[in-house]
Each structure stands twice: as C-alpha cells, then as structure tokens.
Image 1 (spheres, protein in one colour):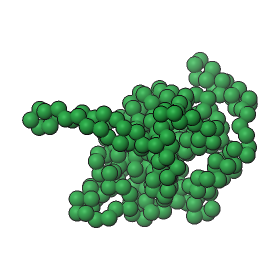
Image 2: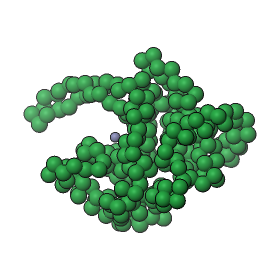
Image 3: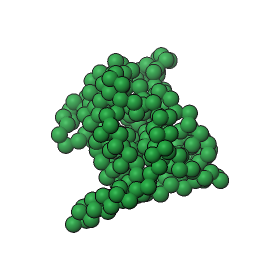
Image 4: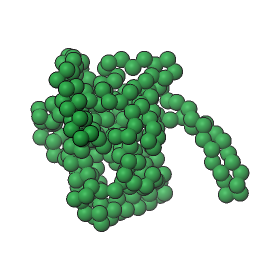
Length: 255
Ligand SMILES: [Zn+2]
C-alpha cells in the first residue's frame, strides 16, 4: 500500500512540476558526460531530478545559498548513476549540505600504542551512513573527466545501503556474485600495486585507501571517462555496466 501511495505522490509531483526548460538546458549543457543519452533517457533523468529535489533537502552552509542551478546540477549528477536503478536506491535519508568550498572535519585516530590523535581534515565531500551527503560546490564546479565529487559521494550511498561500510557493494540479485567480486579484487590488487610502485595512475591514487573508495572513484570514472575504464579494466567495466545498468562508453561513442 505504501508503495502505491509513493508512486501516486511521485506521479502527481511530476504532473505539477514547474521546472524551467531554460534552466534544464543550461544545467545539462554544462555536464559533458550526459552526451549520448537518448531523449527518453534525458526525460527520465529530468523526472528523477525533479523527484530528487522534492524528496531530498538541500541546505547551504558557511553562508552559501544554493541557487536553483546549483540544486538542479547536484540533482542531475546524483540521478545519473541511478537512472536505471530508481530513486529508491537513495532511500533512508534526506539531507544534502553544500559548503562553498572545502570543509574541515575533526578526525580521531588511535595509534597502535593506544594513544588517540586528533587532527583536522579538509574534504571536498563526505557521505554519512543513514545521514547526509556533504559537498563542496567549488569542487563540484571543478568536475572533469575522472573527477566528480557528486557521483563519488552518491556511490558511497549505494554501497552503504547494502553492504559492508568499507568494502565493495553487493551485486544485484541477477548478477554473478563470483564474477563481480573477482573483477573488483583483480582491479583493486592491480591498482594498489601500481600506487605502491609509484606508477602514475589514471584515477586518483586515493582510491587505494580501501575497497569502498576504489568503488566510489571508479564510479566517477565509469560515468565521466568510461572509455578509459573500459580499456584499463575491461572485466570491471562489464561488471559496472551490469551494476549501473548503463553502458556510458557505448553511448559516448555514438554521441
Ligand atoms: Zn570517498
């Protein structure tokens, strides 16, 4: 019953949506990784973004007031990975906090002798399990092929909702679990080896910190430089295409 009510509410929200077509074109034109999406996919992306803005709550921090263009840009970038998964992939939390630039968080770490060290960390984004996504608008604007802080943090939301916090997310029911994990293990081992040897990597070496970071960074790359991911990690690319139910390399080639 709850599902029917939600569907009805969403259909009503889309019927009453007052999204400015000029704003939609302005925002989507500025995101090159949307190129190649079919008109039907762009329409579903728009519907997803409208509902996203309705169901999530965005707040500025440190005096930042997110404009309609900022809000829509974040919604569109967050909706791209779940275009074929559905908005409920982001269920269970509502808040998005947007800082004008990098933000500082207090960290605590216990060393092997049991001494607790406190320090400040500067972040461009952070995702809390069951809580908000925090983003730096300056870093969102710096987005380029291989770097997309919105896709990164929302990819964290996907693995947090279904699995181990620090590990790769579980595959969908119809995917082959062995193939999924084998592709991640092989690519992650190879990547960490390259970082250890000081080899220059195509994606941020930060991705070697833990499997969940590798998943988030590879998700950014999958959508913003898919052909590079496909040529470096063909097995993993195939598994990501099954997971996200999209083939960005194919659609960019046709664009
Ligand atoms: Zn991360």
